[in-house]
Length: 136
Image 1 (tube, rainbow, N blue to C red):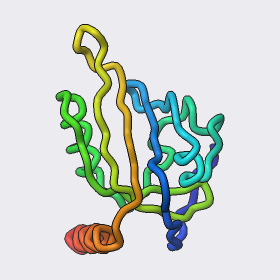
Image 2 (image 1 turned 180 degrees about the vertical axis):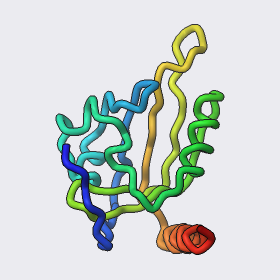
Image 3 (image 1 turned 90 degrees about the horizontal axis):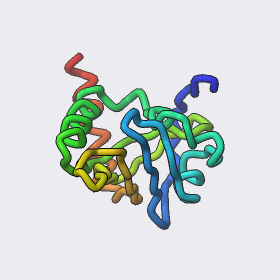
Image 4 (image 1 turned 90 degrees about the vertical axis):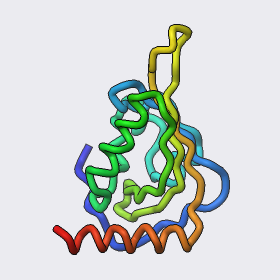
C-alpha cells in the first residue's frame, strides 16, 4: 500500500465504539464496521495489515514503547491516540487495549476498543504533542 500523506484536517469520530484485534506482531485479525468507517479502509485492506497502518506520525515513539511494555507484561493500556485515516485526515480516539490470553495464560494477541474523545481531552493531547515537538 502507498504511504499516506497526513493532512492537517480532522475527521470527527462520533457514535459507537471501534474494535480491532491483532496477533502478537500487531497484524490485524478483526475489525468492526465502525473501525472501517473511521479509518477509511475496508475490512479487506485492514485484515492482515499491521495496525501501524493508522499510526499518525505526530505520536511519539515513547507512547508506543510504554504501551507495548504494559501490554507485553499482561496489563491493559489506555490513553488518547491521534490516528491517520486512509484519506490523510486525522482522528482522535480514547482507546483501551488489552492482551488476549489462552488457557495457559499466554498472550496470544490484543484487542482494542476506541471511543470518541471529549474535545477537552483532544485539546490537552494536542498541547502535549506540541510541547514534545518544542523540546526536540
